[in-house]
Image (cartoon, rainbow, N blue to C red; front, side, top):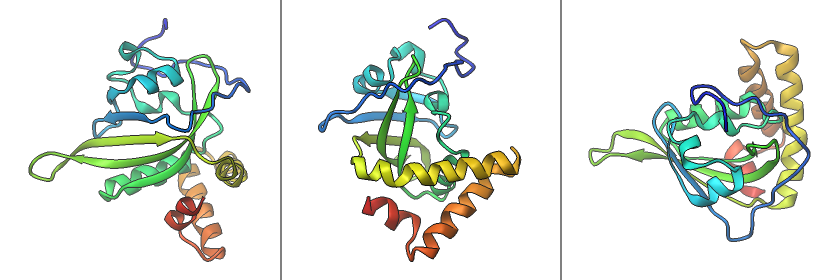
Length: 178
């Protein structure tokens, strides 16, 4: 990959999907700023990046443009509150393909209990979970596009939480029910 390691590569998304196997587990670890400090072989294989391409790079380098920024605001707000996060995420491979994961991200603590980074464990999601979240993500993206960059993540998170509240559920209840 001939791109500067300090910036996200300019990759054009394709419609090619890579589907995780039933027993595949993608594992990565980041520092507090979201820079990758560890990636397992399955992550490298699925995302099609070498270890050299990943270590020290922002985890968002695999963010697919179909993912609303608000989903990541919710993720970071949850982690900064030192709580674990569960979510469905569409990631992009080095050649523009995509893969869906059910992610569980937990704070990594040192011996004294201080949060020093994050562990992310990702597995194959159920097809019906993807079908349930995709229209919500599309609505969140539309809100973000009409709101403008500065307020976009807050606006789409507010929409998501209001929608779930009107359904009589919370984010965690909804995601874990999928």
